[in-house]
Image 1 (spheres, one colour):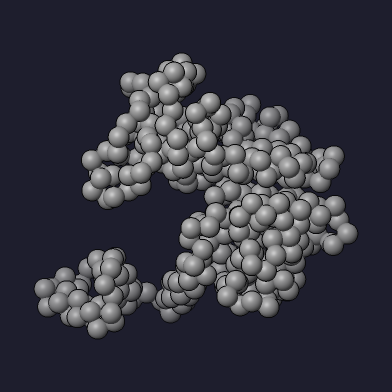
Image 2: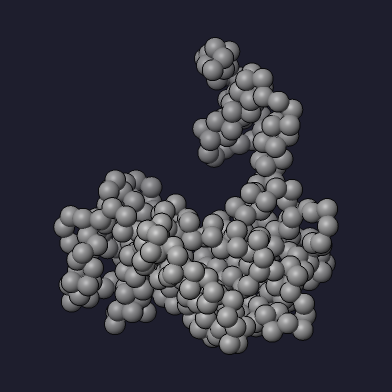
Length: 345
């Protein structure tokens, strides 16, 4: 790192620029972004690499602005093929599942293209649809349902920034049959869940009535991936494979019935709940998930010290536990068990 970027004078100059820009919150993070940009210059970064970094940051800013007005509204992302035609049964499935979720107050996020994306946006309606489109030299055009309202769509140059924003804001995901792009998005979701890099979320693989598309995937998992030892036997258990719109909607909404969110504090996992479980409920959870616990039982808890310092959802009830290493997959089963408790709202 250049000495010029570590001097007290430089830090003071940076603070003045931030002051002049009117930034009042998260100032250390803004300073870090600015410093990183300057370091890219002193590193001798190539013009092409600078263009990638600049465009990615600009695109993320635009997408953050798209979602900001709806931060308190639950969202579900629908993935699927841009090549699905209007008369395809899958088109109707995407439209119907989006309409059902929108009727329950969920905004529907799509890739703002034709096919399944068009169907989901139609089902959600103008007010409840958000789109993150991609600029391509062929095939995909912006979703006509969303183009009429520019405030509900943002356009991206890079797939990696687009995929980030299609996943970052949503509390559930529905994947319909598609090609390489859909498979890429679906496997990224599964990877983030398997590795614990994303919080547990409901994922639905939705087919047309009596469809066999996702059955082929589950067969490949059972016959090839699990025997090869490259995934755990329960890795696909966190996913619902169905051809029912009603089952898909129930899977998305039921996941958040009592469970609200989680936070790691050291090696302790804090699960935040809307309703307090009874002592009998907690005893039952300890018995059911004893093999998944690393040390000590699941216990009810008040907000931990660090949560008080951050004023982090102090209104919610809590369960605290220590998970066995690589037991991330069991989190989905634990959350579902919590949502099924008699004390759940």
